[in-house]
Image (cartoon, rainbow, N blue to C red; front, side):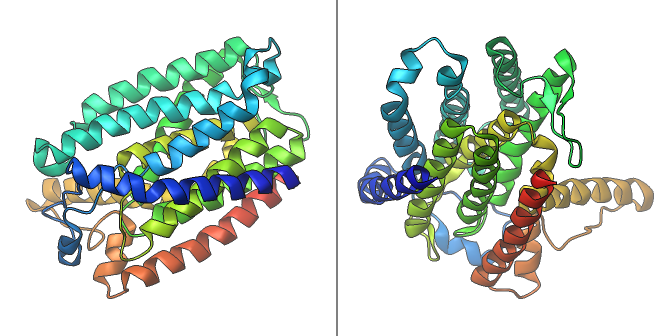
Amino acid sequence: MEFALILASISFLLAVVWGPFLIRILRRYNIGKRIRIDGPQGHRTKMGTPTMGGLMIVVPVVLITVALNIYNLLGQTVIGRSILVPLGVMLAYALVGALDDIAGVRGMRQGEGYPARRKIVWEILLSLGIAVAMLVMRLQFAGQVGVPGVRQAVELGWAWMPLAAFVIISSANAINLTDGLDGLAGIIVASAFVAYGVIALLQGQVYLVHFCFTVVGASFAFLWYNAHPAQMFMGDTGSLALGATLGGVALMTGQWLLLPVVALVPVAETVSVALQVLYFKYTKRRFGQGRRLFKMSPLHHHFELLGWSETQVVQRFWLVELLAVMAGVALALW
């Protein structure tokens, strides 16, 4: 644990130093945020703020993890090669997110990037590939699920594969939906990785503990530049990569049933979007005109339109997330 905390500090320092260079690069190539037309009016001032800031997290995490595990990566043990899973998930989803971010700033679909159907096909293929790789590598909890109150992990066999793909995809998109306010996604992601870092520590998965806290340190560094008013945004490059990696880490600990608890805020954000869409379609079919359940979705925009300031939403959501993280760790101990 001591070394994991040191890694978090090193990751923070590297990312903080890398941050200003990244901002300059993004500004030079006009990789700036395009604001949704139907978004809150107060967000119009954020137009042009550099996006793809997730690279500030991904690059240091990958470099530190590879440097730390270069010997193990070349080895033949399953434990040594297991670190390839979160690394592979992070890099693959960062690439998908980067392509989407670039498409968005180049004028496609009013800043929204590639169509959702195209992205979901990519995500399904990637997630299924990751799930198969985990089973083939025979990782500790591949094919299993931990149930609170049950000492022995439950064996699911190959039925685990589609469930694992769903966990990764849903986690990636939940964090993506959460990334809408300055500092919100970064602090939520950092808190969730702390939870799974602790769970991995209790299981003796040292490599995973180091990885989780490396992500935490880099996420804190990102928040240095993403705090309101943000100097850069995470973009899909960061939100998809970190969300998918969080799902991958949850699978590696076997405690993926606890992910909706640990990531309570992203789950609430996702549910708010689903309810908004379903309610709008239902009322349109029933009354001839669609109605909204929330003032706006995802949920953080609803509270903004209720009169909460952006910083109030972020801070209050984080307090809820901290309680959820503590509950998740407690359930893992049960």
